[in-house]
Image 1: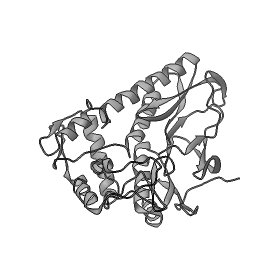
Image 2: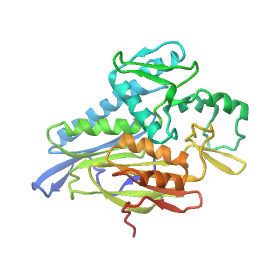
Image 3: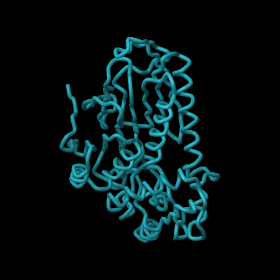
Image 4: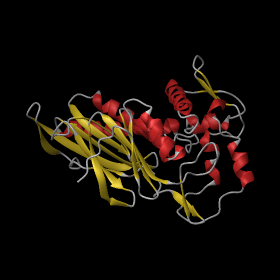
Length: 335
């Protein structure tokens, strides 16, 4: 569950005037917290007036709701559900926006050698992440479910704007990338509005910040200790970028004393172990969302090596034994 990041700067007040140093003009902060896409969203806008800031947040919420209606695999009327219903039967015409999101997801699958795969949704139904102690499913059940996973079996026709899952019973789901995409789109919308100087979208830990915060050009973002979210292990100074964290302490189950996170390894069909939290810092929340998921699957050593091979992306991993692993250029501030 991506709920491990906390804003370290005071952007929580509704209609609070701040002093904008660059132009010496007042900024008004408006924030709303609500449930969207099945999880907690916090949206903040910094506007030239109270009404403008409130309107920006309202429009951002509407944009996220629009995205949810498009990509939700739990909504039987969504285009994603239509793709899943027709798996192994026929291609489905969908919006170009959804085609592009699926295409980008497949590119991350190729980049990560299959560690990230939106077709993992074909196996998630055999697990319940309710924090209880239970046995793993049998090998035969896992093998049967793994047969339905494979990003190479997602066929896209860009000309016809269709998506086809080649195996009956296959499913795609955007749990590992959708909230980051929604954060991106909400920020893009706010940037297009007159009178909005900056903002924050925090989609249960998929956090994107941009522009003025009313204090200075950097937004201090605190990273919580997964063992005690009320405490911090340090903070980052960022702007116009995203910080995305996946953690194993909200959605998990126990088996023989081992904690299994809600992130499933698409190659083995078994939920991941060994990592408490994985944080990605990169310019794009959608990519950060997918990569944070990927790190759990790769494990700490391979994950850090993978991130170090990428440009303009940093990572921080906390393992079950409370060791901290960071990429080469991550600048974490500590007390």
